Image (cartoon, rainbow, N blue to C red; front, side, top):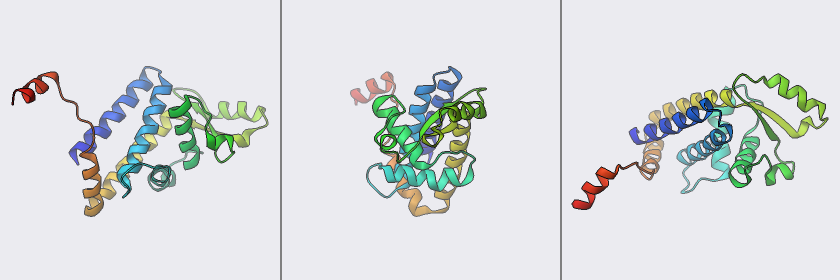
Length: 180
């Protein structure tokens, strides 16, 4: 569980760093990737999928939070960010998901909602505060890890997957490994 926790902690530290430095797009990419990883860890499948992403969101995040978005909205936002660095995705183009309008820092979600209402297309958009999403994601990770601890079979599977995580190895360590 140590490798799993350490890697998740590192991702959260990176997200926090990006937010502190007002680099919102990189933070959103990290958040989306983290959801992908969590979905994969939670599933019995070999690879992450749309279903594993959405199932994790629907199981650990949405039932316990106050976000207005759905799992498909978050997945569509992930697709837009990772594939086109935009809010556009196949799911939003097909009107199967809403585009997420992001607020962060001291920005008000209500102000953002008011502006969206002026477009007369508010059914195409949903608002999410990035800082709130990070807080809720952290709480969801805690729930997920607590559930893993209570279920040895699922914990074993997640740990086996976590053993495939990249590891940071210093150049000194590489030199030592090369000498052996």
